[in-house]
Image 1 (cartoon, rainbow, N blue to C red):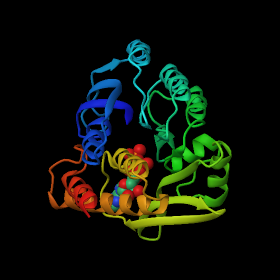
Image 2: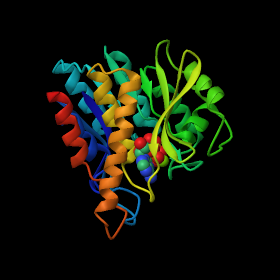
Image 3: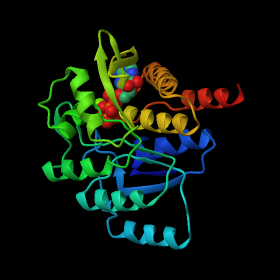
Image 4: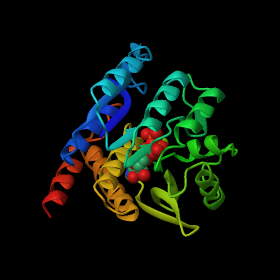
Amino acid sequence: MLVAEDLSAVGGISLSAAVPVLTAMDYQVAALPTSLLSTHTSGYGTPAIVDLSAWLPQVFKHWTTAQLDFQQALIGYVGSVALCQLLTDYLTKQSLELLVVDPVLGDLGRLYDGFDAAYVVAMRQLIKPADVILPNVTEACLLTGTPYQSQPELAPLLQQLQQQLKSGAQAIITDVTQDDQIGCAWLANDQVQFSGQQRLPGHYNGTGDTLAAVLAGLLGRGYSLERSIRLANQWLNQAVAATLAQHRASERQGIALSGILREILALDQG
Ligand code: ATP
Ligand code: MG
């Protein structure tokens, strides 16, 4: 599986979280950083960043010469219009059995720093070849041009997302609140489906990235969409609970992953 997203040396999110999760599921992972950061961007001050836009075309050229064919791909944080276009071109030429795109654009109704309307347009291209996309509510609103609401009407939002995807592809909104639960919403036979778990107190870094890695891994292993989402939400809830139980002095390090790894290994044996 090709996994492309930022590599933050410190903070335990994105690529650092995806690689162990997918390795535990027995994937051979090609870990492609889209940029290098000294830390992630939440809680450590301004990170030292290396932009890898000049390197990526060389990587793709080499991989093409080496005839490296990926069966699955997971795309997370990309970071620039140029990188989105490079990835879109490369992925469109691959014959993948599964392409999962987490269209990372923003949260809580706002674009992340450094992103603008042109970046949203580039992301609309990157989701076109995807089999599964995992926007949060903010990203679903941005992709569809819907004014942001924290608890939007899900049916029209999901329908509009589906219209932007190829036939048979699936949009899953990842941070949906229903009563005291947080979870995922998607459409099945035009009906909104929801699978969630109790929302635990606090805010955590890396939950979205880890959810994406778990879902991509389970779907690639042939688990149904519903079972994959249900397991992913259960495991994320346990990981957040384990993080809470550690009574950490600061919130900036990503969630505790070892429980998820144990669940994955137990699943493979059973
Ligand atoms: P990100 O903000 O990292 O881009 P996201 O907005 O797509 O990701 P999150 O809000 O991080 O999604 O939530 C992803 C999943 O993590 C949820 O579906 C849920 O399973 C779990 N999760 C996140 N926060 C909590 C919480 N406070 N309590 C329990 N589970 C949580
Ligand atoms: Mg979020």
